[in-house]
Image (tube, rainbow, N blue to C red):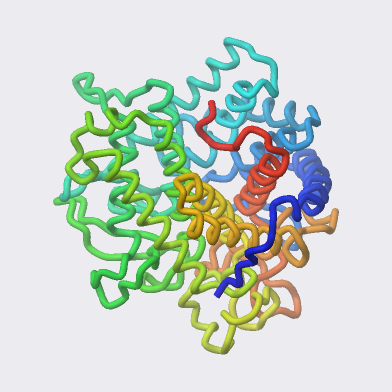
Length: 464
C-alpha cells in the first residue's frame, strides 16, 4: 500500500517543479516543431518519439493545452501564441465531433484554459475573443450531452465510441464541459424545441457512473470490493436495463484497470469543488428522484471519491505508482509487490504512471476539499497521499530528463491488452514511454502545485 509521507509540504517540491518546467518547455517546442497535424494527433511514444494511433482523436487538446499551461507557469508568451494559434487552427472539429465522449478532455484543455487565463488577467481581455471561447465551450457541452443513452432506472449516460450500450468510467472527467456549458447559461435544444438541461445530464451521468461502474462493498456481486472500479458497463439499449461489467483496456471486468479508477477519483473530486459554486435551488428544480437535493449530490460524490481513494491506497505500491491493473496475471509472480516501490523495469507487468498523475490531482483536490469542511484528519491523509505521489513522479525514473525523448512522464501505458505499447529491446514488458494524457496531467499537476506554493489563484476548470 502507499506509504503516505505526512511531513511532506508543497514547498518541498518547488525545486522539482522548476526543473520540470525547464524540461517541459523544450519538449513542447520540439514536438510542435516536428509534428505534422495532417498525420493525426500525437498519442504515445515509441522509442521516445510521439506517434499517432487512429482509434479516436482524443489527445490533441492535451498537446496544445500543455503549451497553455507552460505559459501559465512561466509567462513565456511563445507558449501562449503556440496554444492560442493551434486552438484556432485545429480544435474546431473537436467542438462539433459527434462521435466521441472526450469533449471535456479536448476542449476544456484548450478553449477552457484560454478563457480562464483571460478571466485571471493573464492575457489581454478582448470581448470577441472571449465570446469565441465561450461559444466553443457552450457548443461542446451540448454536443457531448446529445450523445445520450436513457436507461431503465430513470438515469442515462453519455455513451462511448463503442456505441449506445457502453458507459465508460473515463467520461466522468468529460462532465467538465457540461458543467461549463451550464455555467455559461447554455442548454441542448432537442426535437420540438425541447430544452434539455446540461446540469440534469451532468448529474444523471455522474449517478449512473457511481451506481454501475464503482463498487461499494454492498454485496452487488462476488467481486464487490469497496472502491473497485470497472472500466465499462454494458446496457441493453432496447429496454435500458443494465447487463454486465466489461472492459476495453483493463485485464478483466472483475479487476480494476487503474487508469479507469484514476478518472473516477479526479473527476468526482473536482466536481465536488464545482458544486460549491452552485445554488442548491438549481438542483432541486430538476426534480431528480435519485439526487433530489444538493446534500444528496454532495454525499454521493463524496462517497464515490473516498471509496476509490481508499482502494487505490490499499492496492498500490508504496511510492504511489500502480501497476496497470490490480488483477494483472503477472503480479502473482511478484510476491510482496505492494510492500515496496513499483518497478517499471520488472519482467512481469507494466506500471502506469499516467494513472498515478491523474490520481495525484484527485487526492490533492479531495484532501483540500475535505479540510475546508473541517474534516482535517481525512483531508490531510488524502492531500499528503497526493504529495507523496507527486514526489515520485517529478523525479527519475518517471521524469523524462533526456532531451531526445519527446515525452515528459515515463512508464505510461496506453492499451496493454491490444499490445500497442512499445517493449524495448532486452525487456519483456512495455516501459520507458510516454503518452499525451500522462504528460498533460503531469503538467496540470505541476501548475496546480505551483499555484499552491505561491498562494496564487486556485486552479479549477470552472474559474472562467
